[in-house]
Image 1: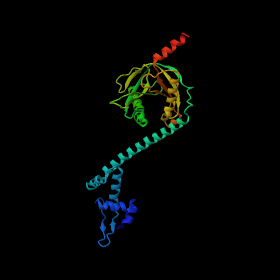
Image 2 (image 1 turned 60 degrees about the vertical axis):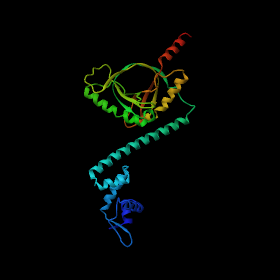
Image 3 (image 1 turned 90 degrees about the vertical axis):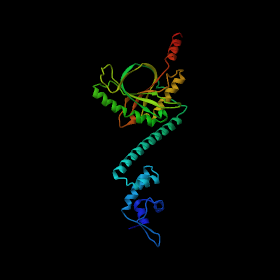
Image 4 (image 1 turned 180 degrees about the vertical axis):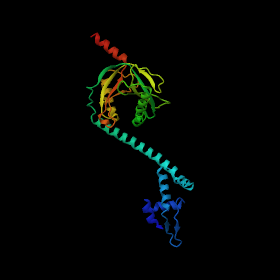
Length: 292
């Protein structure tokens, strides 16, 4: 048999924790010396301790853990629960890393305040374009960039598979655009759209949407690097719009055209960001310019 100290060391828990488990009836020692009150455990009880700790890591309360131990949760059920919890933790790590990158990027942007470079912003006419697309909902909207990435990114490989199955070729760079999709007061939910240009090819029996994105006038700029820092280019475009007396058309969401997007090196991405402008303001400015 193992002393409580040895058992605690082998199980990677404290003696205090083992005493607590004994007190609540979760893991009682195999033997207690009637004279000294010293607790002794068997090596077989380590498997019970492992289950207790695994269930605790899943977020269950000790009372819930005790009920599951009493019900003799089998190894298959426990393995499935642990795998699910692992996936949840991995997703949380990805989201936390994305937030950390965003904080770093915003700090760099704050350091350049007052020196916003708008020289690369260009007023451009964006022609209408016919696309194949899939869409999804990002509950957190722009308040939660990780939610946008998690919901938008998987759409592209899925859309490519569906287009290949339908015999529809891709005729240009991938596109992303966004629309507000509120479901209640104060809701920041947006709909994310992943699209590929398809020209005038005939499409029959498709399991994706085919839409024509209308023409519009836009303030555009090239964003170089990860899209986690796209707000830097977006802020430059916003400064240019304000400095030149234009107004955005709608909520100001930029359409993104991924001109170069190596899958394993986000820092080398080149993306054109296109912010729709109010055409009436442009027309008024052009009319004023022509009369001068």
